[in-house]
Image (spheres, rainbow, N blue to C red):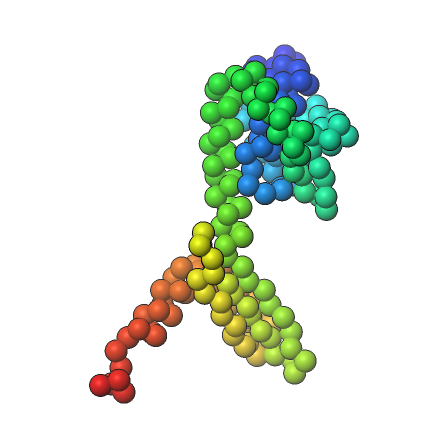
Length: 178
């Protein structure tokens, strides 16, 4: 079947992969890059997979622990070749990259984990950062694992709400202060 996209050969597909990886804010999985590359109808999985392998083999990308990142060599070649990509492909990529980078940034700014204590209870550690650094770090004890997971999930779903609620409680005038 004939391709209807702007990507017609492996070289153009490699340019697209380099364009994408040069703009990601951190290393990502194969699937993330594939999803971003599917912005053009000319991209197919098998050619994409072969191009990813070639780019790793030639030193344009690195692959560590299942995460791909662009190298200095890849960045140089990306800058040289990005104008070879169709403008509409670059625009579609940029839309997807914006969404992806926002998710990656958010993931690095909102963190939580659950640890079991020796006494059988659980500690839920929650942290909220912004671009300037840490805003809030909080540890809570939960008596059961399901309670700890619930606290963790609720924090991850609305970390700013947790922060604002805590600030309201801590900043509220109390009768004892008067």
